[in-house]
Length: 379
Image 1 (spheres, rainbow, N blue to C red):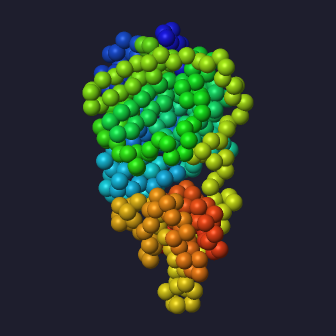
Image 2: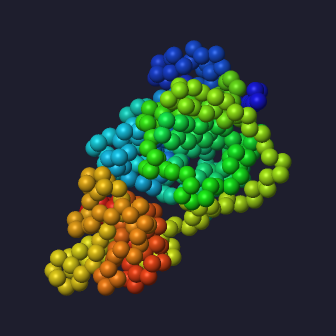
Image 3: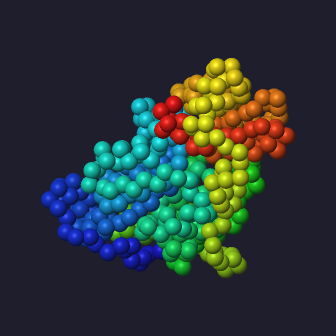
């Protein structure tokens, strides 16, 4: 158990009259009070992912009075996000998630400073990003990013709160190397690709994200203020259909190899996905579309996002072929026609392009920065 963990940060300066009024009900709580609220004011918390878990986490961290909230995400808002990613609204579809999330936090609490990291967390940047914060709240949706967060937190001595959801189930834990177990004690190695479905494949109940995200913020507040007993050393398992929360013990594995560097695993490459792939930028694509419209140079533009994303917002002339369909049959495209693939930000299109090139297509590339770059160009 982790009883007796000291508060994570020193208190900030005295609270203002506005802060005293805003946090009045929280100031009444034993274990928080005015000193604890000043610790929250001084805290710097990084939220990884502005999605299903990141959404409630961002809102409740802001509402609790965390002074600086960072958010790292390279994706844009899609219609299919909205049933669970409550920090975004219908009008935000097509916007960068970090921008939409920052606006929502500002509406919830203008006293909070938001730092936007519109980038993909990689082995090259994870340690640097994490080093700027006292605590990480990880709501990422893939194993690769979780290992990056774990390794960066181990190397910087940073505690982190982890959450995961799928269908009607969720898990929450706290990891802090030197004080208790790490994510690599829970999952020594990632599962084989394709053996664990994603939310996009298996679905998720939006309210489960809210429940797990709220539990994550509760742990974050406890760590910052020193209140209560942390989840460090336990994994909390939520079954929404049975409406149960069950704690499981977790101890450090003495045989686990020490972390000496941030190690990329499947799902989180150690460089941007386009570094070794043929690509076009948004201006190139606009030129090629004009040439195609004039009948001077033909090519096929393929949108590998989900159908609802394409229906909500698309590049004119793009043909929708979801990533799963491309991966199932990467030789489906006519090799005589040049091919350009795109997605929201470049990650899915890079994966599709690798498969298409491996299948032998002689002239294929993808759009660097995805439809977000296209929108930024004014396309």
